[in-house]
Length: 396
Image: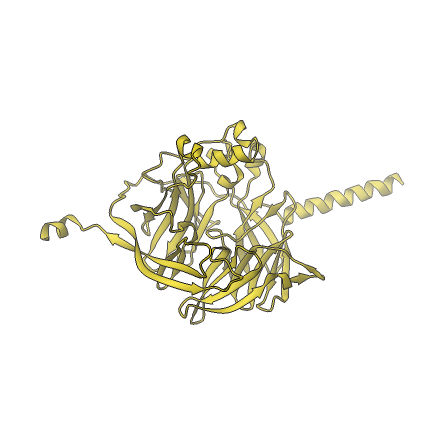
């Protein structure tokens, strides 16, 4: 019996090693810090125009939404979203300001059970991606499951999500999506293992974890959310641009040959986000307060038509505001040119949701928060205002 038991153990060890090799991390790229650019925060400003898209919604639909994306499908510009009631997935034609489909997510069944999920991404009418129960399901507009892939539980469990600024990127059969590790951010050994992205090969049904955090954040303690970067992808130049909430810099990488950091901080914020203390992890109220009272960065959008990058910055609230329950952070948009030089920054009114921008051929649109009882979604267009050069000013 002993030899048989030994061989069983040996087979299990070999199987585990094989699994770890199959799911190994991709080799990290050494960071390269570039020379400091001199920022110019006044050359370009973001302004709010009166141009507004109005999308009518019915009585069962909230005018505030979650998990949405904007996608060009043929000649149609599609805006798809899950409303905050979390029951229906809506697909609109933005040009016609018309609802094309309304999917009842309660009808999504896998093995005779309902898949309860709020994490949905629309690619086209035949390819809608849903995350639930450590699986990504590929479904069509009839909510028929066409394919699925299981995410990794080893070397550690890592889930995913499709929120704005962290949406899937498709390159042939490969899908890049955010990874959210089930690790302890208070432990350095866990931060050393931290990976922020999935590389999923649908043709082979294989998943890999890649893109760790840099040493300065491995050596500091932060909440999980501050170690989960937002990103955009430049299809022409074939690289990702990452905005880590705790980092004043952005990172540009192709995951293969280079990874470069560029200074991209707000003029209203000094340095990186301050690291967490032990007390900041004691209960949800302390964690929430710790986040509110820290400067952070958010989404980074690529305006492919004007060739600018827009990065969200959030200023910490004061003790006085926290005590008086004024808990909304002031937000700004940092404008970077195609070389990642800062060329402007604008404070944006709280009513305009810059955490939910839509980049379209018609311009960049943002949801406007109005009365939740209204039966309309309002999307207002943003534009750029350019400061006259010294020569232009002299001519005037």
